[in-house]
Amino acid sequence: MAVTPEDRDRFASIRTIDLTTFGRKSGKPRRIEIWWFHVDGSFIITGTPGQRDWLANVKANPTVVIHVDGHDIETSARVIEDRQHRLEVFSQPETRWYSTQAELDRLIAEAPMIEIDL
Image 1 (tube, rainbow, N blue to C red):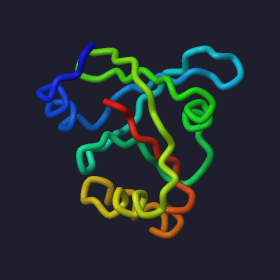
Image 2: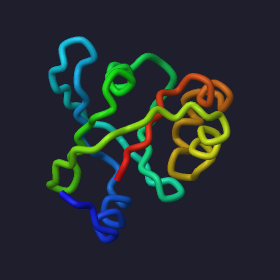
Image 3: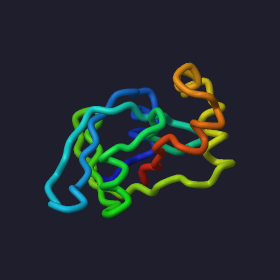
């Protein structure tokens, strides 16, 4: 599916999606329900600090499938490691809930975070 500007606008209003990653060892698809956020024109998936299989899978293979609004979109993801970018994401109103789960410095240093290429 070619994602149009209209699709991006519609997807930006959706909070819960399914994400399929591919097992770093098995290569098998692994589908989970997860939140994503539209921040400064980018689609971001993050979470509270801790290890996540989906993040390890993306590090090993950046190909992902986003299941949103009845569409299955194969694309790629990249891990966001830049501290300033991470601070900007966690400073947005959309991600404010995470600041109730961990200190901002810990979120910036340890939270899983990827950007979806749409």
